[in-house]
Each structure stands twice: as C-alpha cells, then as structure tokens.
Image (cartoon, rainbow over all chains, first blue to last red; front, side, top):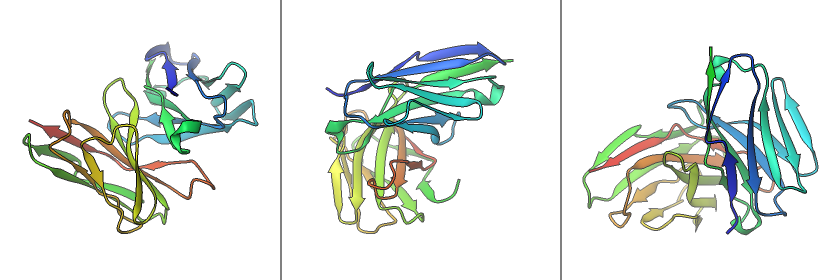
Length: 113
Length: 114
C-alpha cells in the first residue's frame, strides 16, 4: 500500500558537520511534506515543511528539498550542534489516507561533540 | 508547550482492563488525532476526528475506541481486545485540514499493560 520510507534509521555526525535524512513516498499525488523533531521524552514538533509546488525551502540551518519526479524529499541540517540530537520524522499526505499524515519510521540523529 | 494536554503521563494497567487516555486542547482546533508510537515504527494513526460527533478509523484502530462529544476533548479507550497495548500514545490537533496540515502534539501518555 501507500507508505513513506525513511533512511537511515540512525545517523551519527561530528559537531559542525552536515546531516542528511531522506524519505521516499509511493503516491505521486502527495503534495505536503513536513518534518518533525522529537527530543528525548518530548512531543514531536514541526521544524519545516514543503509543498509540492516548491523544490527547496530553507530556515536557517535547516533545509528541505523535494524531487517530485523521483518521489523523494530530504532534510538537510548544516553546522550541526549537540542540541540537534533527536529523532526526526518525515511525513506525507498520501492520496488514499483521507488527507491524513503518514509518517516515516524515524531517524535517530546523534551529534557527537 | 501549552494548548494540548494529555493525562496521565504514565499509566499502568493489568491485562484485561479497559483504560481511557485523556486529550484536551484549548487551541480551538477542529481536528484531533491519536497516534501510537513504538520503537522503530514511527507514528501510526489510530483514530482521527475532523469535527465534533464524528470520527474515523486510522491504520490501526482495532482494539481502540474514541469519542468526540466536545471540540476540546478526544479521549481514547484502549480496550482489552487490543493485543499489544503497551506503547507511547500521542494526541495531536490541527485547524481545519483544508487550511493547514500542521499538527500540534500533546506530551504523550506511556501506557504499560502487564
């Protein structure tokens, strides 16, 4: 069925390096792609999102890119800091889901000092 | 962090008992959602409601029930029919989906059934 796949499941980077997390989706009609950050023991919070009419969106050290042809979107974090350590979830609105979000399985990002 | 609350934070129950998790929001949001979070599996949708007195099954509704009698409240009952109820449960809300898809999450309830 329709789903969202997220890779990698774990990612460790040195402080100051960049981190990239990628998600692929199966529904070509999907038009909204958010990224949520969940720190340990806390609730998920939206950090950035992109709609299908845009190829890239940036917010300070965070960017999301979307390739509709290949049906994948990626989260890019530059100049990583220890406080970026968290679980990151991608999501998408899939056409068979009554406009509800379908989440990826999450990526545990660890920024090493 | 205010706006959407869940209680209690931790809940322990014996197998065979029904248990109800509370979710309240004062954001005047139309839509509310319940997710289950298990390690390595992301967030899976249990039930959602886009308007008072109406709700829809999500991907894993079996063994769960909900009600939406008030706009502010969307309680989730985990019944004894749920085969593996131990999990972290997250409630979320959003304004009418036609306007925005952004969801605001509560702090979660960790349910342990033994």
